[in-house]
Length: 402
Ligand code: PMP
Ligand code: GLN
Image (cartoon, rainbow, N blue to C red; front, side, top):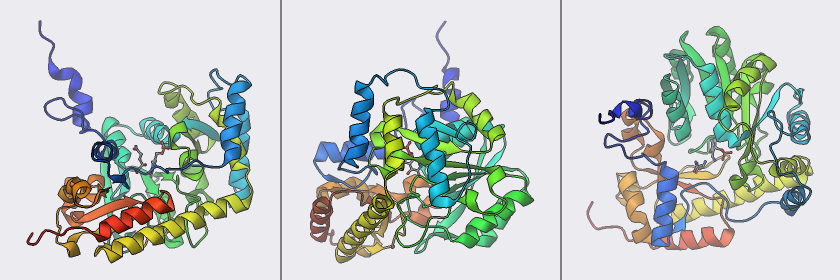
């Protein structure tokens, strides 16, 4: 008997497999491959091109030498859980129990997946902002949830409060917040975060907050959702060492949540990766204990880089939004005569030797048109790389008639 295609149903239903069975690879992997094959400067996928603090790297080497090479405990190594709890207290005044309210994960990616898979029943609604980090749509799809979004419109990319009120409803199981926001660089104002908490109470929804860029906020203190009145008992807070310590390849992330919610998430997580990254866990504990000057230095350095790349893009003729945090700047290619950002990104290596990511890749089809000419560029790169990219973009050959 020939095998039927029925086994493809879930991945296909979630939009992860094409009709011909091919994999819909992530936009980040696709654009990094394009940069590699063309030799273009990769401002697509968000990863730094230089190492983070030497103390952290050295601590990982030491941990390997000292034999931290077997499975760590399911919740994560105590030294890291303690460091995460201390970090929450030090930066946000939050009291977190390291033995019951902290879970170390394989990057924020696994934290997001385990959380949504644990909390969603089929048909439950998840509300996110749009554009959204691509994983959100994929996991909501795998959980057979319903993904609803509130648009972030240029130039400020902040959500309309009435749209939040009309989108969050009694079927909403999870409000999934991403702040600072990828891909727009927006930082949500306190009033918006407070409204989200209010709506979560009103509709008995949980809040999942992806704050992987928590230390990359340029001109204001980061406000964790969990620190707002009434939020803690219904909030799962997710972060990652990758961004703060330039260790995206180590895949050390974590979440903090009330005990009962964390237990449900752990029940799923133990069958995803079980555990990961033994020698990297104590190294990230060293990172989380670095002095304040390290953390302010990271934010100041990235702010300078965001301004450098933004100036280069503006000089090249793009209309540029001013990011307030994170790794990315959004540039509108329309003033240059390009209305299709996806086509533009495919041509950009040839036109200017630079790779970016179309914002439409972070959108559902219905909203993609709204963002069609917008492109995300990463500025988490060395200054000389950004200068070179800016110089090349300034030479951008604009086709005569488009
Ligand atoms: N959430 C957001 C908003 C991200 O930008 C990323 C990737 N940088 C992740 C989650 C995944 O983080 P990690 O690499 O720790 O899995
Ligand atoms: N978060 C990174 C970005 O937005 C990429 C992560 C990935 O490739 N999955 O570029």
